[in-house]
Image (cartoon, rainbow, N blue to C red; front, side, top):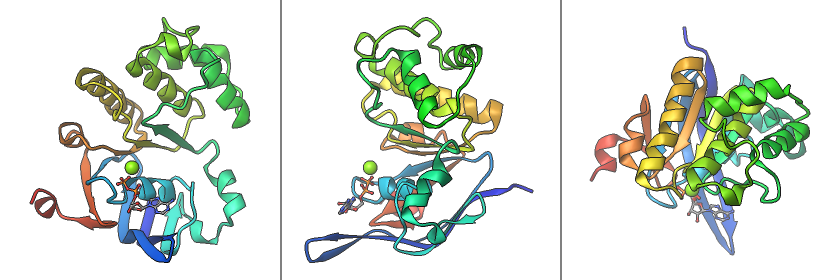
Length: 229
Ligand SMILES: Nc1ncnc2c1ncn2[C@@H]1O[C@H](COP(=O)(O)OP(=O)(O)O)[C@@H](O)[C@H]1O
Ligand SMILES: [Mg+2]
């Protein structure tokens, strides 16, 4: 039987904007199992980033319940969330978020230092090979293409041996070709290593390659049929 990694019931996140309450995530029920590869799709403002932030323990939930690795996140205080996610969840963002003055491998090493998970150089080299970047270890971000920068970010996320990966529009800044290349890395990691991946994308061609697509609208999960209307 598959092990649930994430379980949400009535999960809700309300932002206050002036005098208005924004239900960014509105009563979501969701179960994600170990080894799943899930694409979150939906128009801009539908709640994809908010849902990923909640699942990734980057932000506190407003109501409902959320279990991550069997832990009830609503009972974890805001300053303790960092302990829950550090070294357990890998994050990849649209903007790569590399430090410009550090080389590819230094970017990964620094993040391992902060995660208190030093790794042997040999392991890091294997990781760079895995993301197809063995020849770019000592390059600065500005000397790399967008696709290569995102590969560094993937290596950085994988370096801590996370229990699952969260990727928020990881190909949003890339052209069609590099987008598919990056997506292929995610598919391979999921298939070869069984790593759970939850990825938000605007791109239906990519999204449809995931095992399961979850469509969001106004903070709620909707059916595929409703999404295509
Ligand atoms: N920090 C915030 N404060 C107020 N409203 C926010 C905040 N973050 C997101 N929202 C609102 O929540 C809704 C969902 O946003 P978001 O999760 O970023 O959607 P998506 O990633 O699908 O574009 C939007 O209406 C957005 O304006
Ligand atoms: Mg977003």
